[in-house]
Image (cartoon, rainbow, N blue to C red; front, side):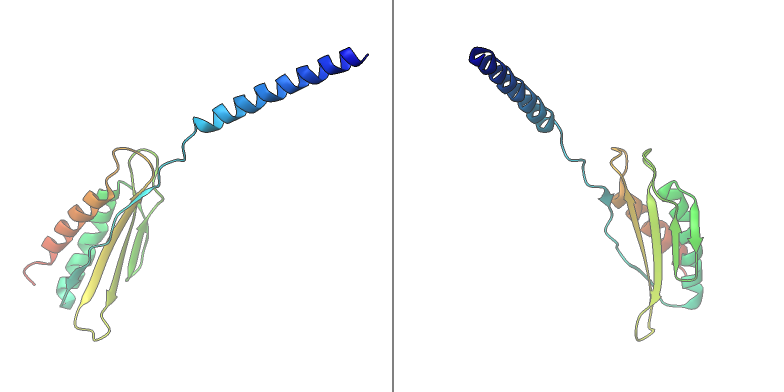
Length: 139
């Protein structure tokens, strides 16, 4: 009986080693998902009511075009798109506020996306800024 007991213990030990090595091998092959990409805001400034209105109007259409997503909400100080998808579309948010001394208004855009390789939030901010800045020229 002791020979059978030793045989069973040895088999159980081998099974435990096989299961442990299988589990460790599975964990070693897994990598943490990449962090979502987020743009850095580069502020734009406008100085007159007409210039700010032209830039804010341009911001709405440009936000939708650059993000590839529909606008979910627009107020007089903020606009946002729907959440990004896995197909290279981005979440976008634009904010507008007056400086404390009311000498100018700042507009910023930020874009973020998941792990899709074609997603370029910093490029979207640059194109957004170029388009919105151009809408405000001449005022």
